[in-house]
Length: 240
Figure (cartoon, rainbow, N blue to C red):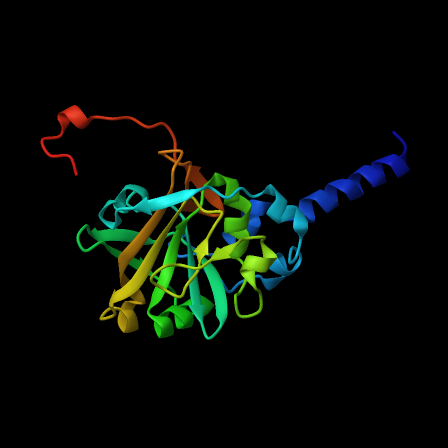
């Protein structure tokens, strides 16, 4: 191999090494407990208005679902997309730190960093929608969590469709497997811990699959994927 060939190959290698991977981009979002929506606006700006994104996305048909059963989708701790609305503007943030607190009423607790654009919108409107994405939206989930809604229309940038909810002003994300409309139930922990307690007032879930392939964040831009389903119902004295 000539010196010029070696130099060309070296230049290609350097170029590849300098190019960040999707994981490195996602890792900028922090601990994974609550993926910020205020980090890398350029990540969304590069894709804004791209028709290629919306063409790839399917829209599952949803049905009404008992709010008391929302835990079946949220209790395993999947990554969710939180949509909000305030003063004529929509926003979306990626979230990984949340839990089911009660079945009836159906209470949902979550941390939303005060540094997120979504924090003010949800604090002022006292409502949101918790949307459940599947692995089909993995890259979009990462990109949503790495740009700010203060400067990016995330629905437009990432080819997502906003549909009116029934009981809140925040929109549903059509491309997600499920959507849970929420109203603020208790804000006693918001000022000190940024911890919101919502009541799920309406649930919409896709008719299939029964067990969607969801994302579970482990940090450093790495996700686990919901896998094999097993049942041990016979070992439970009371199945909830």
